[in-house]
Image (cartoon, rainbow, N blue to C red):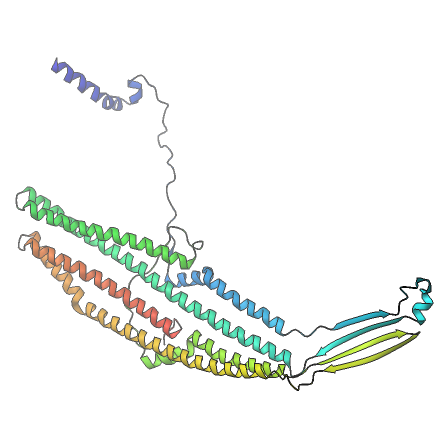
Length: 446
């Protein structure tokens, strides 16, 4: 009975293989005829377009075009330019007319003769002649205010570029960490495979094997954390670029590099005093304050109002000119003139404060840059190579049984920590360079 059951089971299991060898569909062997299949059935197109890769320069261009906060700030320039149009407008002429002595309560007297001989009609046109060149001073003050607004928008752009560059470096750091984690994971996987073979041969204890596997878990965790960090960094960067400007699968093009800055502190300070838009805004603020003073003094001049009046009464037509002007006995716009003079002093103090802030920013950024530069030089001066050589020696000795597991794992952890710290130092240095560019006010360092 048992032999019969085993033989039947073997025949059932071998039916698909026999059917395939005879060229008969498997369904036909069971009585279900399948429709004929083409030799090369079409496959669904599952390919996706390659990710769009952008450099830092590309990212800056996209941010300047699509950042909504910057676009809103630029709109203030257009508003100021519209105010220039208003400031340059001349006063409108004034038309006046009246009709008098109509016989409203004696309608029987109303007629053509009455209108011509007894009613009175007046028609006048007047114009306000502005004295003291008020229109020219209004236009000059409006243009100076537009210059201040334009500098303020440029300063907003400066801060946007720094924030974007800082986030771009964060993406590069995450990608570099991913590359390191992949490389370490592939390298350490060989150690795990060798350890498994040694364990099977009885050349390694189970406790040592578990330590090796736990170290592998650390590399896997590093890779997972780096991937999450990159996704988050790309999302934050996309906010600056504009979500509509790049696709979901976009990526950055670049790497962490060390490019030393050779300029001295004094040269950078001089460049900042020439280039910083916030300092230029305060400088133009002094000019705008002086324009407001000139406008206030012009507004102290009294304007002349001239009117020509045509009158028809008692069958006679006549014309008259009327002139009126305020006598500047009490109101000579003294208060506004005094206020604008105080505003000039305030603007000058703001300019001095802004200049000091610029020099402070440059000094602080330069110190941070030099500190990071020294750290990079230490790493590249030998610490990176020494950690790698120590790891390689320990790995070589361990695989050949000449080094203990603890020594090998310690060198592996030291190498991993050294590489992570070196990449973080590179990212900090690149961020310090971007901070120096922000402090100077231009991306082109001398």
